[in-house]
Image (cartoon, rainbow over all chains, first blue to last red; front, side, top):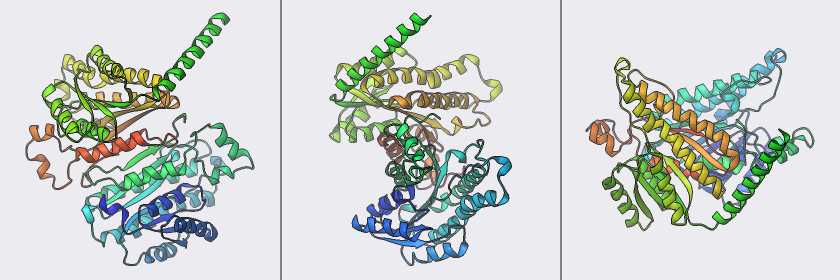
Length: 253
Length: 270
């Protein structure tokens, strides 16, 4: 566990200030890692980097399209000689659509964000981690954010569920291949509404109402989610988690 | 009919009010944990007991053999924490009840209960003897219901708590020669899932930990000497590392609770 907090981390899929990606970035910085905060919107990333700096940590904003190989190469190149301890792939947003109206663009878009991006990110991360040392036999951790849809399809979720299930299977295959080489790959299934800016901004007052109707702690708080991401990263290698689910205590499931 | 419904509604309301009052009172009580199945040291039960004690809980360490329990308790006390050994056979409901009674009588609110019971006895399918099958089911699965019921009733009275079940690879799939164990463990897993869904909204966190590998504990070292060493460094689950995850689950914020989590050594072939 001594290695958990030195070196750097890459968190891909950071946007909302109140969101899972940002919460993990803040947590990793607080634990002493330099954090590369990657996402599509420069202004959002810079706001989070300023927040981390104000908190006494260090971070770099990197605008990046996680489905493009060149973007990911440039992102990982910024790590330089620093040991890369933690990579989080937190990409993939649910866009509900009826099955018969899921056109190729939509299906392919989900696949690119969920499966292709996860794979390309995983390859960059694994190559770099294999090339670096292994304090305590733990070269680094690669964490994927999953969803309820990673485990089951539902009406309106066909394309998203297929893509999330694909990403889950990719992560599981990676864990089996690279665990013995000291790379910890885990998949965190987020099974509920996140109390973050994305949901709060949905449909005028609708998102806010949805969260309020869930009651106190009825939606996942990003900081609480980040606690478990960090706990998985900090695990001693004789007892590593590959999959863990997270949902609010009162969630019907 | 309507009268009966109204009567039931009134009774429910009184029950909820009673629990709220109880829970408010329980807030000020010192906190405890009960670990069922803390026999062997080193082992998962003993390690979780140590972790919970270090986390500030008085730990009731229960199992079938007092000698082993005393060792664990002595270790915890030597570290400056509180523990007590209680002999309990989980196939006997009265003995389960007695452990809870003991904690309550001492003035404690039990906020963590760990069910770490279950013995893997492999055997060929055609050789499964119905009497022994039933015995193993009573010991490994039915006892989970009984412990679960006592834990829930107690936790309803104190406003919530955590109940953790130790699962195994066999909780998810049956392998040749493991039919009895796998069916017991699959049953226990389903129980934990049903309980989580029923009692999560009541602030009771029920989670299932799948131990998918060999545990570097006294049991395995006794039965198969040399096996752990053959796995290389960190090739078997270190009970102390396992306990860290149990404790993490207990400490999770209720907006993001885990129901199921797996644990295996990095080098495990799975």
